[in-house]
Length: 357
Image 1 (cartoon, one colour):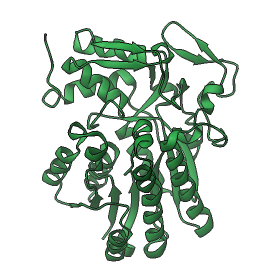
Image 2 (cartoon, one colour; image 1 turned 90 degrees about the vertical axis):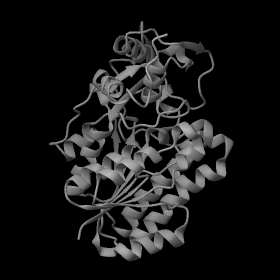
Image 3 (cartoon, one colour; image 1 turned 90 degrees about the horizontal axis):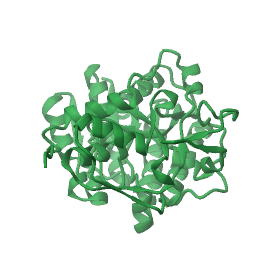
Image 4 (cartoon, helix red, strand yellow; image 1 turned 45 degrees about the vertical axis):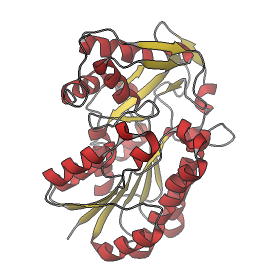
């Protein structure tokens, strides 16, 4: 029996992973206790997605488990043991702003929860590939020190800089402002690397840009593209924070990220780190994203601008995908930002009621 264990299984990336590997005929065990509702309120609850997974997939088992509870985690790993073919760890507290409100919960979920999973894997299945969804926020605000140029609708890097194709994995994560969320993810990221190097385990950190897709339970504090389209469709007010609305993000569709996970599963490596996002193929500024939403919905967005940017926010971040593509040449980006936003609009007609006022 080949079992895939997915934490945060009702979330955006977790649920995409569940469907992908269940679709391959593997048994999938998901751990999710809807902490997203605790973090961001009822609108961010992932229970709707959990119910859909349980309804659609006969080879999916859902466990309402908190990854901070090592006793429960140990029981699960002991039960499945050597049958575990893959571990995908997506569960996290994902917001800068929220972390500052409750640093203990943020760190215990992001750092201690990751440690629990690594130690259980080391004990019961040390040769099983361990995939961790890290974040580009491990680089703190160091990207803001890059030579940037202001264009009409976006910031852009000096074309002569070596990061013109995107930010590579050699950027320092040290001596920079991370936000407390960034710090807890740094701790988890380094732990995943260390368990790989120290215990020769096949671990990988995917340092994601903006991870997105139609199943995202987007909220104001997390899930930029999904929340933007949700506001565009419902007429809800959206606030743009700082940088003249020209801040740039690369956006990777959840299906493209899971495709990268699959490639690693087929040919795992030890203690790897990859920057992963839309790269030069899928990125946008806030202004450009708003214009796209207005074109797709056919109505103006209800939005305003606030001068103060969020602490630790990036002005320009595009991932250099070269390292991953070199190691896994069959992988490629298949979604760009317009296609992602159009899919969100088409997919969420019932969840996000379109306003015609």
